[in-house]
Image (tube, rainbow, N blue to C red):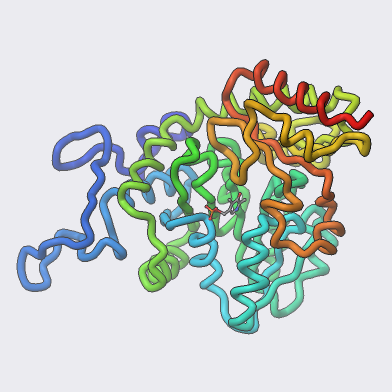
Amino acid sequence: MSNYTNTETALIHGGISIDERTGAVNIPIYQTSTYKQDGFGKMRGYEYSRTGNPTREALEALIRDLDGGYAGFAFGSGMAALTAVLSLLHSGDRVLISSNVYGGTFRLLSKVFDHFGFTYTIADTTDTAVYESQITDDVKAVIIESPANPLMTVTDIKAVAEVSHKHGLLVIVDNTFMTPYLQKPLGLGADIVVYSATKYLGGHSDVVAGLAVVSTKELAEQIAFIQNSTGGVLGPFDSFLLIRGIKTLAVRMDRHVENAERAAEFLAANKAVRKVYYPGLESSQGYEVNRRQAKNGGAMISFELRENYDIRRFFESLELVSLAESLGGVESLVCHPATMTHASIPADIRKKVGITDGLIRLSVGIESIDDILADIAQAIEKAEVK
Ligand SMILES: *Cc1c(COP(=O)(O)O)cnc(C)c1O
């Protein structure tokens, strides 16, 4: 394991960053499915690429080092990573999930894993006492997102991990929004961290991938077994793209966050905006907790326009900022959670957790913030119903 305590350096030199055989400063794309054996049953450490591939292994070692875990694993998507992690559970088990968990995670539990007899409860992880009261005997794990999408709800990861461990729960944190550059959940007591690496880690909206990092040897053995058995692995080329993306994570995130802070202030001061959700704003829920456990508020903002603004017209008037699913790429994107990312959550639950039809989610890119804000300002102006 590399020992670079500064994340900026570990992003570039962590894991296996030099090719042993040639000295290449980038790990080659080992585009192979299998490996010739030197003799009967004599392998050079690789037998078949579902089980192990040098490019994927370099990525897995890199994310392990970035999160300070025991081992890392790369999957074909964030959902494949979550599927592998949730495969640790058994029929009869129950999982607690944060109230505004990613829509796909909710769908995976409510429409796929429920076939296998393990179920979920939506828990209030923002209030430790309420949270603890929701832990029944069958609860075996908790999935936390902080900040959770789309209302950027902050959970005190350390406090929830402590309570959870008292009851023997496995603590899983989806750290997609923060990345290991801004927040390191294993250091706060989590057992497993998962990522949709499709977002900030890849960073260029050109690869779909998932990562998981576990804290112990025992979990590593279990996830390695599940990864190889269920087979949702990341291919060598996508592993290469992800390593390439991760190298610039620190500089990208710095700019994303600088832009997001400006955008949040702009929105908060705009009379057309009813409410802004951004953990980097002092007035936001969880500001203090987030400041304690993360480097800053990240670069995802949600906001609501007042009733006399037509959000359809707002979306259609944007020129620079694209209406699209996903987040965390260099380009600014907006989405409408109620019909897009969170459409798989039933309307009554959406309403209960506060995902209104007027909510807009903004993934602040790294373009000139002046251009981003000018585009949003003109779209807001056009959306006003006079
Ligand atoms: C996108 C996303 C996922 C799912 O990841 P995919 O790579 O799209 O499968 C999971 N969690 C969060 C928070 C996400 O934003």
